[in-house]
Structures are given as structure tokens and as C-alpha cells.
Length: 108
Image (cartoon, rainbow, N blue to C red; front, side, top):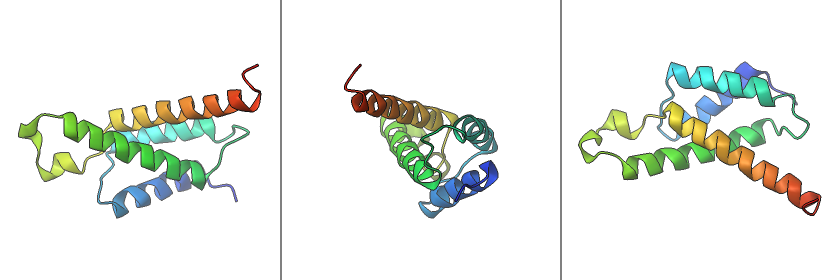
């Protein structure tokens, strides 16, 4: 089953919200752009890809909060997903998938 870009964003937002995080509108714009680039890739895993992306986003958000300014530790800051969190997650997933592809070919 192939989801539309809007459905993928809705699935991601639902997963994020269930974990009590919030996406901003600029995050949704970045996600729309990203999904429109990867949705037609041969190995695109649809909802499985979204789950991986959510896990990376949450990991990046947690690292940012841990390393962040202690004066900003309020609820809005603690549950906010930023463009940086999403961008780092996309880069991490692309790095992992390119590594997996090179392993399949035994580094050739």
C-alpha cells in the first residue's frame, strides 16, 4: 500500500503526537519536501520509513535538549520538534541506507 505524501506526514505527526511532541508548520514543510524527494525511490519503505524517521527525530530532539541551555527547560522547549531535529534525522537515515547499499555490493 502506497501512501500519499500528505498521508505520510499525517502518520508521522500522529506518531510524534502520541509521544507528546509537537511539529511546527515549518517542520511539516520540510517533511513534505523530503517525502516528495524519497517517495519514488526504489527502496522506499512507506510507513516503515516514517517509523525510522520518527525514531531518529526523537533521538535528535532528546540530544538537543540534553545539550541545550538549561534556562530554556520549559514544557514548550521540551516537547518541540525543530527543523534541526528533522534535518539531522534525514541525514542519519540517508547515511545508514547508503552504508547498507554498499554492504550489499561488498564495497564494490
